[in-house]
Image 1 (cartoon, rainbow, N blue to C red):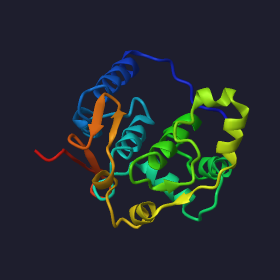
Image 2 (tube, helix red, strand yellow; image 1 turned 120 degrees about the vertical axis):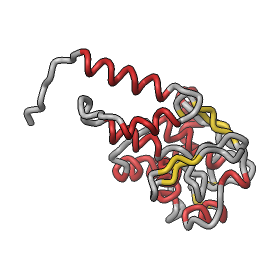
Image 3 (tube, rainbow, N blue to C red; image 1 turned 180 degrees about the vertical axis):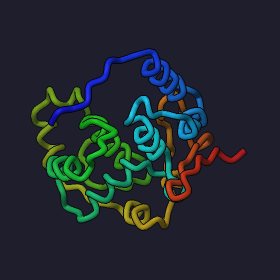
Length: 195
């Protein structure tokens, strides 16, 4: 209960500044290269580098770690977003994304041409929707489940990018189907888009 407190010095600032600059680059290569650096001055940075690399599309499914966990939580089926958020928060101790980002990711999985999640009444639900009590209640009490694609993704038998457009930011990297950087978590390897 007594955390180690250390005064911020130049080494802390240089390492933090370097990490921030690498995360903002147009490809994730510089961020990946941080793993070869001495990051000990910021004890949680190495773990953060790996957590964020895990949010890149996986080599087998094109799902990031949070997307995969979201599908895993929904997999029993007939779960409301309210209950889902409670279970997800308990399971996900890393918490790369906050509550509204989790909803945005869930909406992305359900509001695409070939959805992985079924039953969301409104795939545009977000912070602005909180001011509309009926819409918010309808969303939070809906029953969501996995589609056939969602089940196939969880089993590693399909690739989300084969069926749906991808257009999202990962740091300074715009991920699209044409420029889809992937992360091989098993081998700790960054995989560039096909040339």
